[in-house]
Image 1 (spheres, rainbow, N blue to C red):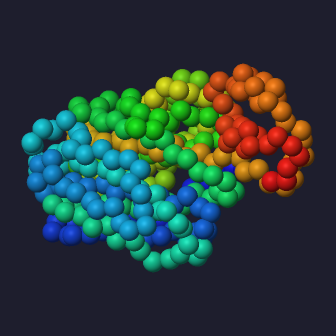
Image 2: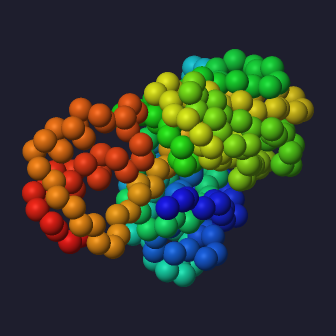
Length: 293
């Protein structure tokens, strides 16, 4: 099993006074896909703003009131909010839009991305961080793991976004994104979308992804990007999601397993476990004779 190349829909914007934002589903969605929705918001009330998780989706991570501006709010300045959701049950060939209700919103952007899978069991980890001062280029932001750590392993994908309170270029401010985590080697990162709008008091940001080529890591990741143009207000939250697809066991497995075998397997568990190892061990523990999966 292997996760496929992410495909993003168009970025949608909504200005001051809107009570919702309707990002567009990308073409080609399959029921086995990972379908994610990223939403960035600049609130109309300092450190306010909100978004309601839509029916059929799960909030995976968020970082609110980030950027280090305190109560400052205005054109090109102010803390921003960022959310990422996953769809619970994607539908083959799904089209149209998915509206997310928002409140106290000055301006917002959103887009949906699908990641093809092989139909295996999916799991998620997350990390968040923020830039709170005027950066230099390249801009490096150390993230902190969420409730479920990223703990990268070979074959995982890291997908992340940043939201800033300013529109500097249209849209070529960010480039050469990368992610690092001690012990893991990532493929070259690919930019997905670069939101940029002069609606209301301006908003911007970027999103990118990278696969784990080899190794594993139990440390929180760091994201890096080159930044062009005026850097003064390139500040705000970063939200990352780690997506993993476990190996699916199919077909027939015939073997004899006794208590000694189980003890041996448990004693020799690799650290960290290889993808699918723990799932396999749980299955093996249920066998004491020849069985058919």
